[in-house]
Structure formats: structure tokens, C-alpha cells
Image (tube, rainbow, N blue to C red; front, side, top):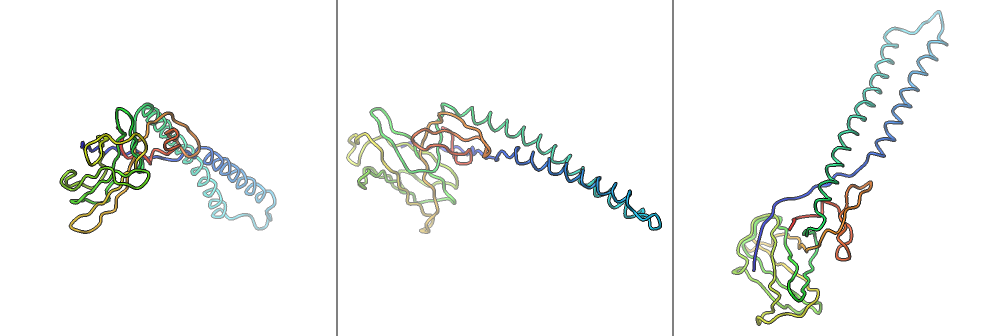
Amino acid sequence: MSNSIDTSLLNSLNQTTAKRGNAATSTDDLGDSFMTLLVTQLKNQDPTKPMENAEMTSQLAQINTVNGINDLNETLQGITRQIDAGQSLQASALIGKGVLVPGNEVRKGDDATTPFGIELDAPADDVTISIVSASGEVVRQYGADDVGSLDKGVHSFSWDGRDMNGQPAENGVYHVRFETAQGGESVPATALNYAPVQGVLTGDEGPRLDLGAIMGQVGLDAVRQIL
């Protein structure tokens, strides 16, 4: 049984350029409204009681603040577009590769089995891995002597496709079950299964990976390891 560790994690940022564009438009309208109100006040003020300089300065400062916010929004939009483009490029590089995402399936074919993995919230010195058939039968089991101690984080494994007696198991979909502990205390863990990246889709929620019929579509934040 092989065990490899890859600590590379991918983070995802949602694409909200359209929403921010609408916000910028609203800011422009607000600035125009400020200026219109100020001009209207000046035109209709009582000549015997003209607007105080401090009051005019205050209103002009408000207009400058609105304009400053608008400029900041435009700058943030530019930065976000660059981030989005980088994420899409990063996601496209995954096409044709396999990834580990949350799930507990293991698939066995004629020549190989799919990898699987685990994400530990804390170190574990007692780990048991069970390969279970669709009927609930434990086909193969690996104990602490086989797995050893594991650090916090993501770990990947492979099954040789054989049962407890060393005979080839039937082809099909199996499930992996973990029991993890440290010093006798249970350790929270998430099972991971393998899926090939078939394509990349983009939208308001950012780049999403198409994992086909196995897992459907997931965000970059679902990827725990690239194989």
C-alpha cells in the first residue's frame, strides 16, 4: 500500500465584477446628485443669508469622498479581473489531471483502482482503513501497522485491488471508511476520492471544475490534492 502527501491546496475567489460594476454606476449617480443639490442650493439660497463657507466646504468634501470611493472601486475591479484571469489559467492547467475531492468512493477496473485519501484535522497515531463493498462487506482492511502515524493534513493512498485473502476483488465501485485516533481520542477526518478533471467552466461564482459523472462540478476550493 503506497502513501504520498501533497500539501498543495487551491483557493477560490468568487467573480463579482458585474456586481461591482453596478455599484460603481450607483456611485457615479450619487456624485451627480450631490453636485445637482449643491448647485440648486446656491441658485435658490436667500441672498440675505448666504450659505456658510464651512457648510459649502463640508458638502464639497462629501463629493470628493464619493469620487474617491468610485476611483477605489475601479482600482479594485482591475485587481479582481487580474485575479480572476489567473485563477482561470490555473484551473485550465488541471484539465486531464486527477484530483482528490471530498468523497469516499474507490473504483476498481481490470487493470487498476482509483486512488483515495484522507484529510486529518489533527495528527493521528491509530488509523484503520476499510474498503467496503456496495453490500457493506469489508473487502480489505489496513490497520495501524500498515498505515503508521499520520500528520495533520492531506494524505493519499492506493488499494491493490485484492481482498483479505489476497485474491482480486470484483470490478466495481467500493467505499472507503476511516477510523482515526490520537492517544485513544477520535480525530476528525474527511474521506477523499479521486476524479479526473474534464473541463473548466467560468461564471459569477468563479472557475468550476467539471469532474464528469463521478462528482459533477466543484469549485477550486474543493480540491485537496492534485495527482
